[in-house]
Length: 309
Length: 266
Image (cartoon, rainbow over all chains, first blue to last red):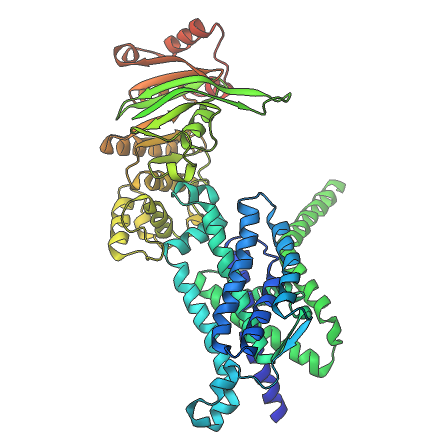
Protein backbone atom coordinates (compact mmCIF):
# COMPACT_ATOMS: atom_id res chain seq x y z
CA UNK A 1 0.00 0.00 0.00
CA UNK A 2 2.75 2.37 0.98
CA UNK A 3 4.58 1.67 -2.23
CA UNK A 4 1.50 2.49 -4.33
CA UNK A 5 1.31 5.83 -2.55
CA UNK A 6 4.97 6.45 -3.24
CA UNK A 7 4.60 5.50 -6.89
CA UNK A 8 1.59 7.79 -7.27
CA UNK A 9 3.43 10.60 -5.57
CA UNK A 10 6.39 10.26 -7.94
CA UNK A 11 4.09 10.06 -10.95
CA UNK A 12 2.35 13.25 -9.86
CA UNK A 13 5.64 15.04 -9.27
CA UNK A 14 7.02 14.09 -12.67
CA UNK A 15 3.65 14.77 -14.26
CA UNK A 16 3.65 18.36 -13.10
CA UNK A 17 7.32 18.88 -13.94
CA UNK A 18 7.00 17.56 -17.49
CA UNK A 19 3.62 19.27 -18.00
CA UNK A 20 5.61 22.44 -18.70
CA UNK A 21 6.93 20.82 -21.89
CA UNK A 22 3.39 19.96 -22.94
CA UNK A 23 2.41 23.55 -22.12
CA UNK A 24 5.21 24.78 -24.37
CA UNK A 25 3.91 22.56 -27.17
CA UNK A 26 0.38 23.80 -26.55
CA UNK A 27 1.75 27.27 -27.31
CA UNK A 28 3.98 26.39 -30.28
CA UNK A 29 2.14 23.46 -31.86
CA UNK A 30 -1.50 24.04 -30.97
CA UNK A 31 -1.64 27.84 -30.95
CA UNK A 32 1.09 28.94 -33.37
CA UNK A 33 0.75 25.80 -35.53
CA UNK A 34 4.52 25.29 -35.61
CA UNK A 35 6.13 21.92 -34.85
CA UNK A 36 9.02 23.22 -32.78
CA UNK A 37 11.79 20.61 -32.77
CA UNK A 38 14.01 22.84 -30.65
CA UNK A 39 12.19 21.31 -27.68
CA UNK A 40 14.50 18.28 -27.12
CA UNK A 41 17.57 20.48 -27.03
CA UNK A 42 16.13 23.31 -24.98
CA UNK A 43 14.94 20.84 -22.34
CA UNK A 44 18.51 19.60 -21.84
CA UNK A 45 19.77 23.18 -22.05
CA UNK A 46 17.42 24.21 -19.24
CA UNK A 47 18.47 21.23 -17.14
CA UNK A 48 22.18 21.78 -17.82
CA UNK A 49 22.07 25.49 -16.99
CA UNK A 50 19.99 24.77 -13.91
CA UNK A 51 22.35 22.07 -12.61
CA UNK A 52 25.47 24.09 -13.34
CA UNK A 53 24.18 27.25 -11.71
CA UNK A 54 22.87 25.22 -8.75
CA UNK A 55 26.27 23.56 -8.40
CA UNK A 56 27.73 27.05 -8.22
CA UNK A 57 25.47 27.69 -5.22
CA UNK A 58 22.52 29.55 -6.73
CA UNK A 59 19.59 27.11 -6.98
CA UNK A 60 16.93 29.85 -7.12
CA UNK A 61 18.75 31.97 -9.68
CA UNK A 62 19.18 28.77 -11.70
CA UNK A 63 15.47 28.71 -12.57
CA UNK A 64 15.23 32.09 -14.39
CA UNK A 65 18.67 31.47 -15.91
CA UNK A 66 17.43 28.21 -17.43
CA UNK A 67 14.30 29.93 -18.73
CA UNK A 68 16.39 32.67 -20.30
CA UNK A 69 18.63 30.08 -21.95
CA UNK A 70 15.55 28.31 -23.34
CA UNK A 71 14.16 31.60 -24.63
CA UNK A 72 17.45 32.26 -26.44
CA UNK A 73 17.23 28.85 -28.13
CA UNK A 74 13.66 29.69 -29.17
CA UNK A 75 14.83 33.02 -30.52
CA UNK A 76 17.42 31.35 -32.76
CA UNK A 77 14.77 29.01 -34.20
CA UNK A 78 12.34 31.90 -34.70
CA UNK A 79 15.03 34.05 -36.32
CA UNK A 80 15.94 31.27 -38.77
CA UNK A 81 12.36 30.70 -39.86
CA UNK A 82 11.00 34.24 -39.89
CA UNK A 83 14.00 36.25 -41.08
CA UNK A 84 16.14 33.73 -42.95
CA UNK A 85 13.44 31.77 -44.75
CA UNK A 86 14.46 28.40 -43.26
CA UNK A 87 11.45 26.01 -43.19
CA UNK A 88 10.16 25.89 -39.62
CA UNK A 89 10.83 22.19 -38.95
CA UNK A 90 14.35 22.46 -40.33
CA UNK A 91 14.98 25.60 -38.27
CA UNK A 92 14.18 23.60 -35.13
CA UNK A 93 16.40 20.69 -36.16
CA UNK A 94 19.31 23.04 -36.94
CA UNK A 95 19.02 24.80 -33.57
CA UNK A 96 18.66 21.46 -31.83
CA UNK A 97 21.85 20.17 -33.46
CA UNK A 98 23.73 23.30 -32.48
CA UNK A 99 22.41 23.02 -28.95
CA UNK A 100 24.16 19.66 -28.53
CA UNK A 101 27.48 21.49 -28.34
CA UNK A 102 26.04 24.32 -26.27
CA UNK A 103 24.64 21.81 -23.80
CA UNK A 104 27.98 20.02 -23.47
CA UNK A 105 29.54 23.40 -22.85
CA UNK A 106 26.95 24.23 -20.21
CA UNK A 107 27.85 21.01 -18.38
CA UNK A 108 31.55 21.80 -18.50
CA UNK A 109 32.27 19.63 -21.56
CA UNK A 110 31.01 16.46 -19.93
CA UNK A 111 28.09 14.36 -21.10
CA UNK A 112 26.46 14.53 -17.68
CA UNK A 113 26.59 16.54 -14.50
CA UNK A 114 25.25 15.94 -11.02
CA UNK A 115 24.70 17.88 -7.85
CA UNK A 116 25.76 15.50 -5.07
CA UNK A 117 25.02 17.22 -1.74
CA UNK A 118 24.42 20.74 -3.06
CA UNK A 119 21.29 22.65 -2.06
CA UNK A 120 18.49 22.68 -4.64
CA UNK A 121 15.19 24.58 -4.62
CA UNK A 122 13.67 21.36 -3.28
CA UNK A 123 16.13 20.92 -0.43
CA UNK A 124 15.77 24.61 0.43
CA UNK A 125 11.97 24.30 0.44
CA UNK A 126 12.12 21.18 2.60
CA UNK A 127 13.36 23.24 5.53
CA UNK A 128 10.32 25.54 5.46
CA UNK A 129 7.47 25.29 7.99
CA UNK A 130 9.85 24.05 10.65
CA UNK A 131 10.21 20.71 8.91
CA UNK A 132 6.65 19.55 9.61
CA UNK A 133 6.41 15.90 8.63
CA UNK A 134 3.54 16.46 6.19
CA UNK A 135 5.54 19.13 4.45
CA UNK A 136 8.71 17.04 4.37
CA UNK A 137 6.82 14.23 2.70
CA UNK A 138 4.95 16.33 0.16
CA UNK A 139 7.11 19.39 -0.49
CA UNK A 140 8.45 18.13 -3.81
CA UNK A 141 4.98 17.54 -5.19
CA UNK A 142 3.60 20.83 -3.84
CA UNK A 143 6.53 22.81 -5.20
CA UNK A 144 6.37 21.13 -8.63
CA UNK A 145 2.61 21.64 -8.83
CA UNK A 146 2.90 25.26 -7.69
CA UNK A 147 5.50 26.11 -10.33
CA UNK A 148 3.49 24.47 -13.12
CA UNK A 149 0.14 25.88 -12.04
CA UNK A 150 1.64 29.36 -11.69
CA UNK A 151 3.14 29.08 -15.19
CA UNK A 152 -0.23 27.87 -16.48
CA UNK A 153 -2.16 30.75 -14.89
CA UNK A 154 0.33 33.29 -16.23
CA UNK A 155 0.15 31.75 -19.70
CA UNK A 156 -3.64 31.80 -19.58
CA UNK A 157 -3.69 35.46 -18.54
CA UNK A 158 -1.13 36.32 -21.21
CA UNK A 159 -3.21 34.70 -23.95
CA UNK A 160 -6.05 37.11 -23.13
CA UNK A 161 -3.89 40.19 -23.66
CA UNK A 162 -3.61 42.00 -26.96
CA UNK A 163 -0.19 40.46 -27.63
CA UNK A 164 -1.56 37.05 -26.65
CA UNK A 165 -4.49 37.50 -29.03
CA UNK A 166 -2.09 38.45 -31.82
CA UNK A 167 -0.09 35.27 -31.19
CA UNK A 168 -3.25 33.16 -31.27
CA UNK A 169 -4.37 34.83 -34.49
CA UNK A 170 -0.94 34.19 -36.05
CA UNK A 171 -1.52 30.45 -36.01
CA UNK A 172 -5.01 31.01 -37.36
CA UNK A 173 -4.69 33.60 -40.12
CA UNK A 174 -1.44 35.47 -40.72
CA UNK A 175 -3.01 37.82 -43.27
CA UNK A 176 -5.43 38.97 -40.64
CA UNK A 177 -2.61 39.62 -38.17
CA UNK A 178 -0.84 41.79 -40.74
CA UNK A 179 -4.10 43.61 -41.41
CA UNK A 180 -4.24 44.45 -37.69
CA UNK A 181 -0.88 46.22 -38.07
CA UNK A 182 0.98 43.49 -36.19
CA UNK A 183 4.06 41.85 -37.69
CA UNK A 184 3.70 38.03 -37.63
CA UNK A 185 7.50 37.79 -37.45
CA UNK A 186 7.26 39.44 -34.07
CA UNK A 187 4.43 37.28 -32.75
CA UNK A 188 6.14 34.05 -33.88
CA UNK A 189 9.36 35.16 -32.21
CA UNK A 190 7.65 36.01 -28.93
CA UNK A 191 5.68 32.74 -29.05
CA UNK A 192 8.70 30.52 -29.67
CA UNK A 193 10.79 32.32 -27.04
CA UNK A 194 8.04 31.79 -24.48
CA UNK A 195 7.52 28.15 -25.46
CA UNK A 196 11.20 27.36 -25.12
CA UNK A 197 11.42 29.28 -21.86
CA UNK A 198 8.70 26.95 -20.56
CA UNK A 199 10.62 23.92 -21.85
CA UNK A 200 13.76 25.29 -20.21
CA UNK A 201 11.83 25.72 -16.97
CA UNK A 202 10.74 22.10 -17.14
CA UNK A 203 14.35 21.03 -17.64
CA UNK A 204 15.43 23.26 -14.77
CA UNK A 205 12.94 21.76 -12.31
CA UNK A 206 13.58 18.17 -13.42
CA UNK A 207 17.34 18.72 -13.26
CA UNK A 208 17.25 19.94 -9.66
CA UNK A 209 14.68 17.32 -8.67
CA UNK A 210 16.79 14.46 -10.01
CA UNK A 211 20.04 16.20 -9.03
CA UNK A 212 21.51 15.18 -12.34
CA UNK A 213 21.39 15.88 -16.05
CA UNK A 214 22.75 13.96 -19.00
CA UNK A 215 22.82 14.57 -22.72
CA UNK A 216 20.21 11.90 -23.43
CA UNK A 217 17.57 13.25 -21.06
CA UNK A 218 15.86 15.30 -23.76
CA UNK A 219 15.61 12.64 -26.43
CA UNK A 220 12.06 12.24 -27.63
CA UNK A 221 10.69 14.75 -25.15
CA UNK A 222 8.86 16.61 -27.92
CA UNK A 223 6.88 13.47 -28.80
CA UNK A 224 6.17 12.72 -25.15
CA UNK A 225 5.00 16.31 -24.74
CA UNK A 226 2.69 15.93 -27.73
CA UNK A 227 1.37 12.68 -26.27
CA UNK A 228 0.57 14.50 -23.01
CA UNK A 229 -1.13 17.29 -24.95
CA UNK A 230 -3.24 14.84 -26.94
CA UNK A 231 -4.15 12.71 -23.92
CA UNK A 232 -5.10 15.83 -22.00
CA UNK A 233 -7.22 17.26 -24.80
CA UNK A 234 -9.00 13.93 -25.17
CA UNK A 235 -9.91 13.97 -21.48
CA UNK A 236 -10.51 17.66 -20.88
CA UNK A 237 -11.61 18.86 -24.34
CA UNK A 238 -10.17 21.40 -26.73
CA UNK A 239 -12.41 24.44 -26.67
CA UNK A 240 -10.86 27.49 -25.05
CA UNK A 241 -7.48 28.49 -23.75
CA UNK A 242 -8.20 27.72 -20.10
CA UNK A 243 -9.15 24.19 -20.98
CA UNK A 244 -5.96 23.82 -23.02
CA UNK A 245 -3.76 24.88 -20.13
CA UNK A 246 -5.54 22.44 -17.77
CA UNK A 247 -5.41 19.70 -20.40
CA UNK A 248 -1.62 19.68 -20.58
CA UNK A 249 -1.35 19.15 -16.82
CA UNK A 250 -3.96 16.40 -16.77
CA UNK A 251 -2.41 14.75 -19.82
CA UNK A 252 1.07 14.87 -18.38
CA UNK A 253 0.01 13.36 -15.06
CA UNK A 254 -1.89 10.57 -16.84
CA UNK A 255 1.14 9.87 -19.01
CA UNK A 256 3.38 9.56 -15.94
CA UNK A 257 0.88 7.21 -14.31
CA UNK A 258 0.88 5.03 -17.42
CA UNK A 259 4.67 5.14 -17.35
CA UNK A 260 4.71 4.12 -13.69
CA UNK A 261 2.28 1.24 -14.29
CA UNK A 262 4.41 -0.03 -17.18
CA UNK A 263 7.54 0.41 -15.11
CA UNK A 264 6.29 -1.61 -12.14
CA UNK A 265 4.04 -4.22 -13.75
CA UNK A 266 6.25 -4.72 -16.82
CA UNK A 267 3.18 -5.34 -19.05
CA UNK A 268 5.50 -4.17 -21.80
CA UNK A 269 9.25 -3.70 -21.38
CA UNK A 270 9.99 -0.13 -20.30
CA UNK A 271 12.43 0.19 -23.19
CA UNK A 272 9.47 -0.16 -25.57
CA UNK A 273 7.64 2.80 -24.10
CA UNK A 274 9.10 5.35 -26.53
CA UNK A 275 8.01 3.24 -29.50
CA UNK A 276 4.56 2.95 -27.96
CA UNK A 277 4.39 6.70 -27.31
CA UNK A 278 5.50 7.47 -30.87
CA UNK A 279 2.82 5.14 -32.25
CA UNK A 280 0.12 6.69 -30.06
CA UNK A 281 1.08 10.22 -31.11
CA UNK A 282 1.30 9.31 -34.80
CA UNK A 283 -2.10 7.62 -34.64
CA UNK A 284 -3.74 10.47 -32.76
CA UNK A 285 -2.46 13.09 -35.21
CA UNK A 286 -3.34 10.88 -38.18
CA UNK A 287 -6.84 10.16 -36.85
CA UNK A 288 -8.74 12.78 -38.91
CA UNK A 289 -7.08 11.59 -42.14
CA UNK A 290 -7.71 7.93 -41.30
CA UNK A 291 -11.34 8.73 -40.50
CA UNK A 292 -11.82 10.63 -43.77
CA UNK A 293 -10.17 7.83 -45.75
CA UNK A 294 -12.33 5.18 -44.10
CA UNK A 295 -15.45 7.21 -44.83
CA UNK A 296 -14.48 7.53 -48.48
CA UNK A 297 -13.86 3.80 -48.88
CA UNK A 298 -17.15 2.99 -47.23
CA UNK A 299 -18.95 5.25 -49.69
CA UNK A 300 -17.00 3.82 -52.62
CA UNK A 301 -17.86 0.25 -51.59
CA UNK A 302 -21.51 1.16 -51.11
CA UNK A 303 -21.60 2.80 -54.55
CA UNK A 304 -19.95 -0.24 -56.15
CA UNK A 305 -22.41 -2.61 -54.51
CA UNK A 306 -25.30 -0.51 -55.73
CA UNK A 307 -23.83 -0.62 -59.23
CA UNK A 308 -23.85 -4.43 -59.20
CA UNK A 309 -27.56 -4.62 -58.70
CA UNK B 1 -5.08 61.21 -50.22
CA UNK B 2 -3.52 58.52 -52.39
CA UNK B 3 -0.95 59.45 -54.98
CA UNK B 4 0.56 56.74 -57.13
CA UNK B 5 3.34 57.90 -59.45
CA UNK B 6 4.59 55.76 -62.29
CA UNK B 7 4.66 52.44 -60.46
CA UNK B 8 5.81 49.32 -62.30
CA UNK B 9 5.95 45.71 -61.22
CA UNK B 10 7.25 42.75 -63.19
CA UNK B 11 6.78 39.24 -61.83
CA UNK B 12 9.34 36.51 -62.56
CA UNK B 13 11.69 38.80 -64.50
CA UNK B 14 14.04 37.03 -66.89
CA UNK B 15 12.00 33.82 -67.07
CA UNK B 16 9.47 32.50 -69.59
CA UNK B 17 6.79 33.46 -67.07
CA UNK B 18 7.83 37.11 -67.04
CA UNK B 19 4.75 39.28 -66.65
CA UNK B 20 4.57 43.02 -66.40
CA UNK B 21 1.59 43.38 -64.10
CA UNK B 22 1.85 47.13 -63.56
CA UNK B 23 3.29 49.37 -66.23
CA UNK B 24 4.16 52.95 -65.26
CA UNK B 25 0.77 53.37 -63.63
CA UNK B 26 -0.21 56.66 -62.04
CA UNK B 27 -3.34 57.47 -60.08
CA UNK B 28 -4.42 60.23 -57.77
CA UNK B 29 -7.36 59.91 -55.37
CA UNK B 30 -8.61 62.99 -53.57
CA UNK B 31 -9.89 62.61 -49.97
CA UNK B 32 -13.34 61.06 -50.05
CA UNK B 33 -12.96 59.71 -53.59
CA UNK B 34 -14.64 56.35 -54.13
CA UNK B 35 -13.26 54.79 -57.30
CA UNK B 36 -14.36 51.49 -58.80
CA UNK B 37 -11.95 49.52 -60.97
CA UNK B 38 -12.95 47.22 -63.77
CA UNK B 39 -10.86 45.43 -66.36
CA UNK B 40 -9.96 42.28 -68.27
CA UNK B 41 -8.59 39.13 -66.65
CA UNK B 42 -4.98 39.80 -65.71
CA UNK B 43 -5.23 43.54 -66.30
CA UNK B 44 -3.52 44.15 -62.97
CA UNK B 45 -6.48 45.18 -60.80
CA UNK B 46 -5.60 43.02 -57.82
CA UNK B 47 -1.90 43.68 -58.37
CA UNK B 48 -2.61 47.39 -58.04
CA UNK B 49 -4.39 46.82 -54.73
CA UNK B 50 -1.56 44.57 -53.55
CA UNK B 51 0.97 47.26 -54.45
CA UNK B 52 -0.95 49.88 -52.50
CA UNK B 53 -1.40 47.56 -49.51
CA UNK B 54 2.29 46.64 -49.58
CA UNK B 55 1.96 42.89 -50.22
CA UNK B 56 5.07 43.43 -52.35
CA UNK B 57 7.28 46.38 -53.11
CA UNK B 58 7.06 47.99 -56.55
CA UNK B 59 10.07 47.89 -58.90
CA UNK B 60 9.91 51.62 -59.59
CA UNK B 61 7.73 54.63 -58.93
CA UNK B 62 6.34 55.85 -55.63
CA UNK B 63 3.20 55.60 -53.51
CA UNK B 64 2.17 58.41 -51.17
CA UNK B 65 -0.67 58.08 -48.71
CA UNK B 66 -2.01 61.12 -46.90
CA UNK B 67 1.19 63.01 -47.65
CA UNK B 68 3.39 60.20 -46.31
CA UNK B 69 5.65 58.26 -48.69
CA UNK B 70 4.87 54.58 -48.06
CA UNK B 71 6.73 53.12 -51.05
CA UNK B 72 9.11 51.17 -48.81
CA UNK B 73 6.82 50.71 -45.80
CA UNK B 74 6.10 47.02 -45.00
CA UNK B 75 2.48 45.98 -45.30
CA UNK B 76 1.77 45.41 -41.60
CA UNK B 77 2.72 49.03 -40.99
CA UNK B 78 0.67 50.33 -43.90
CA UNK B 79 -2.33 48.48 -42.52
CA UNK B 80 -2.43 51.02 -39.70
CA UNK B 81 -4.05 53.39 -42.18
CA UNK B 82 -5.31 51.00 -44.87
CA UNK B 83 -8.31 48.71 -44.46
CA UNK B 84 -8.68 45.82 -46.87
CA UNK B 85 -11.25 43.21 -47.85
CA UNK B 86 -10.62 40.24 -50.10
CA UNK B 87 -12.94 38.18 -52.25
CA UNK B 88 -12.50 35.21 -49.90
CA UNK B 89 -14.60 36.01 -46.80
CA UNK B 90 -12.36 33.72 -44.73
CA UNK B 91 -9.23 35.80 -45.26
CA UNK B 92 -10.10 38.71 -43.02
CA UNK B 93 -10.86 37.01 -39.72
CA UNK B 94 -9.26 34.48 -37.37
CA UNK B 95 -11.72 31.55 -37.09
CA UNK B 96 -10.76 30.18 -33.68
CA UNK B 97 -10.90 33.57 -31.99
CA UNK B 98 -14.23 34.96 -30.84
CA UNK B 99 -15.97 37.90 -32.53
CA UNK B 100 -14.95 40.07 -29.61
CA UNK B 101 -11.30 39.00 -29.86
CA UNK B 102 -11.21 39.59 -33.61
CA UNK B 103 -12.54 43.09 -33.09
CA UNK B 104 -9.99 43.68 -30.34
CA UNK B 105 -7.22 42.80 -32.79
CA UNK B 106 -8.64 45.13 -35.42
CA UNK B 107 -8.81 47.80 -32.73
CA UNK B 108 -5.02 47.50 -32.31
CA UNK B 109 -4.77 49.88 -35.27
CA UNK B 110 -6.07 52.68 -33.11
CA UNK B 111 -3.59 54.85 -31.26
CA UNK B 112 -5.02 54.12 -27.83
CA UNK B 113 -5.32 50.89 -25.92
CA UNK B 114 -2.57 49.15 -27.80
CA UNK B 115 -0.23 48.29 -24.92
CA UNK B 116 0.76 44.71 -25.73
CA UNK B 117 -0.09 43.34 -22.30
CA UNK B 118 -3.40 45.18 -21.89
CA UNK B 119 -6.66 43.25 -21.96
CA UNK B 120 -9.96 44.02 -23.66
CA UNK B 121 -11.71 46.58 -21.50
CA UNK B 122 -15.39 46.70 -20.73
CA UNK B 123 -15.59 50.04 -22.51
CA UNK B 124 -14.13 48.44 -25.64
CA UNK B 125 -16.66 45.60 -25.48
CA UNK B 126 -19.54 48.07 -25.29
CA UNK B 127 -18.11 49.95 -28.26
CA UNK B 128 -17.78 46.68 -30.22
CA UNK B 129 -21.36 45.67 -29.41
CA UNK B 130 -22.60 49.07 -30.53
CA UNK B 131 -20.75 48.76 -33.83
CA UNK B 132 -21.92 45.18 -34.38
CA UNK B 133 -25.50 46.30 -33.91
CA UNK B 134 -25.11 48.56 -36.94
CA UNK B 135 -24.56 45.47 -39.12
CA UNK B 136 -28.08 44.34 -38.29
CA UNK B 137 -27.08 40.67 -38.15
CA UNK B 138 -27.54 40.02 -34.45
CA UNK B 139 -23.81 39.47 -34.02
CA UNK B 140 -23.79 41.68 -30.92
CA UNK B 141 -25.44 38.79 -29.06
CA UNK B 142 -22.82 36.30 -30.19
CA UNK B 143 -19.66 38.17 -29.27
CA UNK B 144 -18.14 35.27 -27.36
CA UNK B 145 -18.60 32.75 -30.15
CA UNK B 146 -15.70 31.75 -32.39
CA UNK B 147 -15.84 33.47 -35.77
CA UNK B 148 -15.49 30.07 -37.46
CA UNK B 149 -19.17 29.46 -36.68
CA UNK B 150 -20.35 32.42 -38.78
CA UNK B 151 -21.51 32.25 -42.40
CA UNK B 152 -19.41 33.70 -45.21
CA UNK B 153 -21.63 36.77 -45.44
CA UNK B 154 -21.48 37.39 -41.71
CA UNK B 155 -17.71 36.99 -41.75
CA UNK B 156 -17.37 39.44 -44.63
CA UNK B 157 -19.59 41.97 -42.85
CA UNK B 158 -17.48 41.51 -39.73
CA UNK B 159 -14.30 42.00 -41.78
CA UNK B 160 -15.78 45.21 -43.20
CA UNK B 161 -16.47 46.41 -39.68
CA UNK B 162 -12.95 45.44 -38.58
CA UNK B 163 -11.37 47.24 -41.53
CA UNK B 164 -13.26 50.43 -40.71
CA UNK B 165 -13.45 50.17 -36.89
CA UNK B 166 -10.58 52.61 -36.80
CA UNK B 167 -11.35 54.87 -39.75
CA UNK B 168 -8.67 54.13 -42.36
CA UNK B 169 -7.20 56.69 -44.73
CA UNK B 170 -7.89 54.26 -47.52
CA UNK B 171 -10.18 51.27 -47.93
CA UNK B 172 -9.26 48.61 -50.51
CA UNK B 173 -12.05 46.32 -51.65
CA UNK B 174 -11.05 43.43 -53.89
CA UNK B 175 -14.31 42.00 -55.28
CA UNK B 176 -15.38 41.62 -51.68
CA UNK B 177 -18.95 40.54 -52.53
CA UNK B 178 -18.12 38.19 -55.42
CA UNK B 179 -18.10 35.01 -53.32
CA UNK B 180 -21.38 35.73 -51.54
CA UNK B 181 -24.90 34.75 -52.56
CA UNK B 182 -26.80 37.62 -54.28
CA UNK B 183 -28.93 38.64 -51.27
CA UNK B 184 -25.97 38.65 -48.88
CA UNK B 185 -23.80 40.42 -51.46
CA UNK B 186 -26.42 43.14 -51.73
CA UNK B 187 -26.52 43.50 -47.95
CA UNK B 188 -22.72 43.71 -47.61
CA UNK B 189 -22.59 46.22 -50.47
CA UNK B 190 -25.24 48.34 -48.77
CA UNK B 191 -23.21 48.28 -45.55
CA UNK B 192 -20.09 49.23 -47.50
CA UNK B 193 -21.89 52.17 -49.07
CA UNK B 194 -23.22 53.35 -45.70
CA UNK B 195 -19.93 53.01 -43.80
CA UNK B 196 -17.84 54.63 -46.54
CA UNK B 197 -20.30 57.53 -46.79
CA UNK B 198 -20.56 58.02 -43.05
CA UNK B 199 -16.81 58.30 -42.47
CA UNK B 200 -15.96 59.87 -45.88
CA UNK B 201 -13.46 57.08 -46.47
CA UNK B 202 -11.32 57.22 -49.60
CA UNK B 203 -12.00 53.94 -51.31
CA UNK B 204 -10.66 51.82 -54.16
CA UNK B 205 -12.90 48.93 -55.17
CA UNK B 206 -12.28 46.21 -57.74
CA UNK B 207 -15.45 44.71 -59.17
CA UNK B 208 -16.42 42.50 -62.07
CA UNK B 209 -19.93 43.86 -62.13
CA UNK B 210 -20.23 46.65 -64.75
CA UNK B 211 -23.44 48.02 -63.32
CA UNK B 212 -21.88 48.17 -59.86
CA UNK B 213 -18.82 49.89 -61.32
CA UNK B 214 -21.01 52.72 -62.56
CA UNK B 215 -23.53 52.85 -59.70
CA UNK B 216 -21.19 52.83 -56.76
CA UNK B 217 -18.80 55.59 -55.86
CA UNK B 218 -17.78 58.73 -57.67
CA UNK B 219 -15.29 57.51 -60.23
CA UNK B 220 -14.82 54.54 -62.55
CA UNK B 221 -11.41 53.34 -63.69
CA UNK B 222 -10.75 50.72 -66.35
CA UNK B 223 -7.49 48.80 -66.48
CA UNK B 224 -5.75 46.95 -69.29
CA UNK B 225 -2.21 45.54 -69.44
CA UNK B 226 -1.13 47.06 -66.18
CA UNK B 227 -2.29 50.58 -66.91
CA UNK B 228 -5.35 52.68 -66.31
CA UNK B 229 -6.89 53.21 -69.75
CA UNK B 230 -10.09 54.94 -68.78
CA UNK B 231 -10.96 57.27 -65.93
CA UNK B 232 -14.47 58.73 -65.88
CA UNK B 233 -16.18 60.80 -63.22
CA UNK B 234 -18.66 63.63 -62.77
CA UNK B 235 -21.17 64.45 -65.51
CA UNK B 236 -19.70 62.12 -68.07
CA UNK B 237 -20.06 59.17 -65.68
CA UNK B 238 -23.53 60.11 -64.48
CA UNK B 239 -25.07 59.55 -67.90
CA UNK B 240 -23.08 56.45 -68.75
CA UNK B 241 -24.58 53.02 -69.44
CA UNK B 242 -22.78 49.68 -69.42
CA UNK B 243 -22.84 49.70 -73.23
CA UNK B 244 -21.23 53.15 -73.34
CA UNK B 245 -18.52 51.91 -71.03
CA UNK B 246 -17.80 48.85 -73.19
CA UNK B 247 -17.71 51.01 -76.32
CA UNK B 248 -15.32 53.47 -74.70
CA UNK B 249 -13.09 50.59 -73.64
CA UNK B 250 -12.92 49.23 -77.16
CA UNK B 251 -12.20 52.64 -78.61
CA UNK B 252 -9.39 53.35 -76.16
CA UNK B 253 -7.68 49.97 -76.17
CA UNK B 254 -8.51 48.67 -79.64
CA UNK B 255 -9.97 45.38 -78.40
CA UNK B 256 -13.03 44.05 -76.61
CA UNK B 257 -13.17 43.77 -72.87
CA UNK B 258 -12.31 40.18 -72.16
CA UNK B 259 -13.42 39.05 -68.75
CA UNK B 260 -15.56 35.94 -68.56
CA UNK B 261 -16.91 36.94 -65.18
CA UNK B 262 -18.03 40.35 -66.44
CA UNK B 263 -19.83 38.93 -69.45
CA UNK B 264 -21.68 36.42 -67.33
CA UNK B 265 -22.79 38.83 -64.63
CA UNK B 266 -25.87 40.96 -64.85
